[in-house]
Image (cartoon, rainbow, N blue to C red; front, side, top):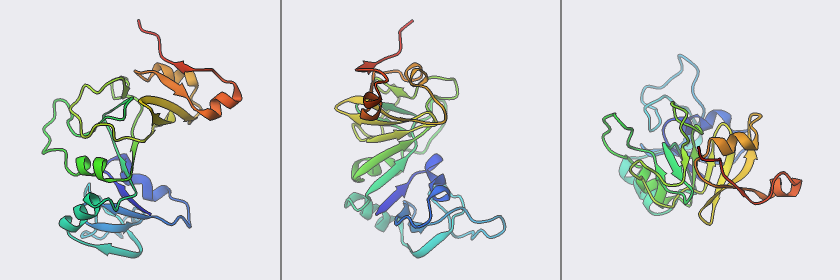
Length: 209
């Protein structure tokens, strides 16, 4: 399995993989076989991820130019891409490149990854720095790609997208269902594991004030 890692939170994934997991991590700048962060003083200044931070490599790693890297992406050879986001809508629209008030060079490879990977996993904080929900009815920021996100992982929950709706699959870090409701700006359905427990029935949405 080939998994591409975006910049930001996704770049931390190699540090948390369990031993024995058969996966090759790819960075769009031309590395396949990324390992965990090297110890201080053991960094190779010529070896970095897409964000420019030092990485190690695993047995069987390979290096190539950006043209070949994006050929892999466009050809559909990436099984999963893990991307950060500023907003995700209930239909899976992804906005992750234009930060309001900041100059950015462009959306980079995220657009092609969002369309070319077989599965798109978004890892992000549940709310922004001002406490505003990042899981929304519709994105107010310019889109990277429409209808591409399959799964969202935040510090509060694991949420899938099914038939144009958020579906709560798992609670994390002691978060409650009500907390997820209040910090999600769209209707959210409960996944099967919650329905089997008889937690709540049907769809739920935070109250408007």
